[in-house]
Image 1 (cartoon, rainbow, N blue to C red):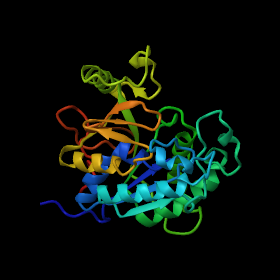
Image 2 (image 1 turned 90 degrees about the vertical axis):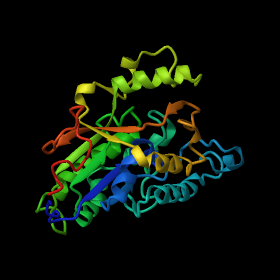
Image 3 (image 1 turned 120 degrees about the vertical axis):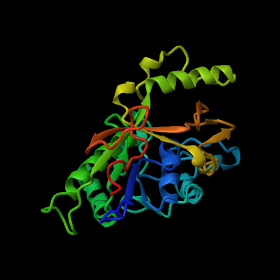
Image 4 (image 1 turned 180 degrees about the vertical axis):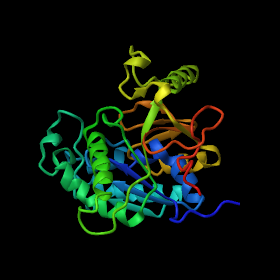
Length: 297
């Protein structure tokens, strides 16, 4: 029998918009919440610039009533219920940073957009959260935000900087805390290739036409992927959480369509790349199957 850890297990995830968390980490969040791990999600914007799948809610769009943000807050709350997560926060408070839209668009230039935020200032809002919840594990995006979205890139920068500052005794108030392990969301090349084949077989529209898998910006070499968390019994919770976002996600069986009508396969395994900390024991596939591997006592 192993001793309980001196500090309760805690997982912190930093995401750009409502729905990013469930697409990338929904099964992992549900699993750890069910295991009694303290799961905290920090969402950096309200997703005000998102496209809208539901015609009767089109009036909420940024170029009309500009009321999508508050609506997506209710969707996020429903998603958290589906995943069993009780600690969700907005960076600096709801609406502190606005959705920046896609790279090179007018929303990028708004002074209140997340893309225009000073990284140290934004990280300063996250440091107190890190020091409060004391996560052993932090999850966020890689340095290109997965696929180049400005808010994803900024969330990466802010999360990584906050981890540094939170460990610095000379910074701010509160007890310093060093995150033991940091992971970036990852999409292995082999998984994307296999997913495309399954979508073809199912007659689903491929996300990208006339593009090779290796050309996709979010694809990483399989060798870089260090952890694979199986959805297992939490797959249904992930699907339910996706369905909490009707303005952004249209689910059907094992597939879902984002608000740009691009179809994707719902991931039954969530993959990660460890960029800080000691790797824990690996499973038969040579990867960790637990983000807390090596930290459980």
